[in-house]
Image (tube, rainbow, N blue to C red; front, side):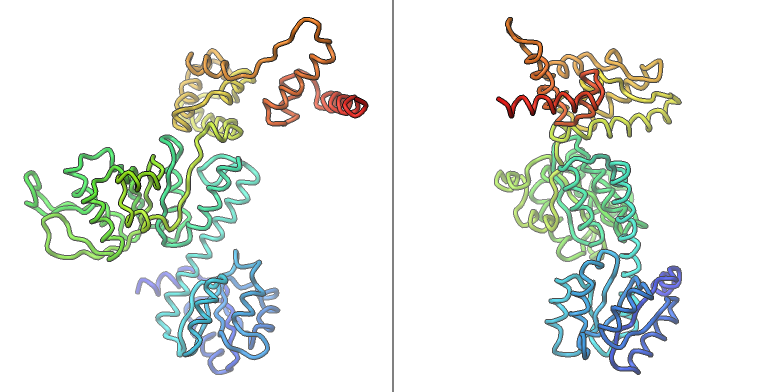
Amino acid sequence: METQNAASSAPGERVLIVEDDPATRVGLAELVNAWGFQTDEAANGEDALQKVTSFRPAIIVSDLVMPRMGGLELLRSLKDQLSDLTVILLTAQGTVESAVEAIKEGAYDYLSKPVDPQRLKILLQKAVERQETLREVKHLRRQLREQGSFGRIVGNSPGIRAVYRVIEQAAPTAASVLIWGESGTGKELVAQTIHELSPRSAFPFVAINCAAIPETLLESEIFGHEKGAFTGAQDRRLGCFELSHRGTLFLDEIAEMQPATQVKLLRVLQERTFRRLGGRQEQQVDVRVLAATNHNPGEAVRNGKLREDLYYRLNVFAMELPPLRDRREDVPLLVQSFLNEFNTRNAKAVRAVDQDAMHILENYPWPGNIRELRNVIERATILAEGEFIETRHLPPLIVTRGEETLPTLTLAPGTTVDEAERRLILLTLEHTRHNKTRAAEILGISLKTLHNKLNRMKEEGNRG
């Protein structure tokens, strides 16, 4: 009943049926149409390619073996469009190996013939959920281009773009993800983004910090307990696995979990069943597990903090979050994002951080990463009296260390004005990572003047 309601609640998705046998093709089209989808038909792969252009389907259900062009050739012809299309293949006996190869090429799934209607219906609903995820990812890509953000994650640096790419790949799947990085780099935010972009987004996201709960209570928190399971267990309590059923469970600081608990966790991941503490009955659960650690997971395995078998089970997708000191070009974007947040929360109207204060923020090493930057901007927003955050609104430690890391230029007596200017321009360009607009602002000259000076320096260099 759930599947029927779900399918009928998402009408309008276009499904192209590709099948060379006319009776099978018409029968499938009528069946799928009765479930609330718009349908069209094609007799082979070549015909389907034309229909993709005119009918613009979101989902293609195609036979694998057909004259003129089969399902695998069709799939390869659509390779550049698979980020917008979901392809389900139909296979007769003896073609399952080809279907598995097709999945490696980008097909979503396959069904054996004769087609089981209920199985097809479930696959189509999952395909609808996947299409919604793909559309959301496409929207986020556009948002990234225009605003320098990916959902609630902010940044445009190469390091954070690599994280976005893994999120795009991992989110539509049910695979486990292992996220690692220093404290304050945003591991839980990444986990939430993966959940929000997944077909499980309508179900719970449950987060638990394994380091914040005493080991004696951690097992109960994760698996739950029955009444009387231990002293103080006065009622039955559901654990995180049951609370996140059909959704996502995020286990932060997984390497702080004791080996005995890691073994039980591994069993749940493998069997999808568990027992509450003090319980006898096996509980079935459908949960996607995301895990995070502050430690390099490879080193955690070598040091015995993380079981090797659990590591491999969680490490289907892995991503390392870069520390803020390695993505300094993202600091202005993050600052503006936090300003928007704290202006709203504190009824303030701070427009920006002034130039001197921004230079300090960009050059401070941020040992506490994004969490530390967020706290600094919240404090500065509250302290600012006018439209701008100035150096005096920043904590003294931030100012001292930020100024220490600013580059300096030392000139010896006898240095010509032209040579001093040349060295100052080059030092400023190095400081701004060759962002000429920023360099011109710091030097107090127009961008055109800077270009003229650089051209003159180049000409003098060529003559020399």
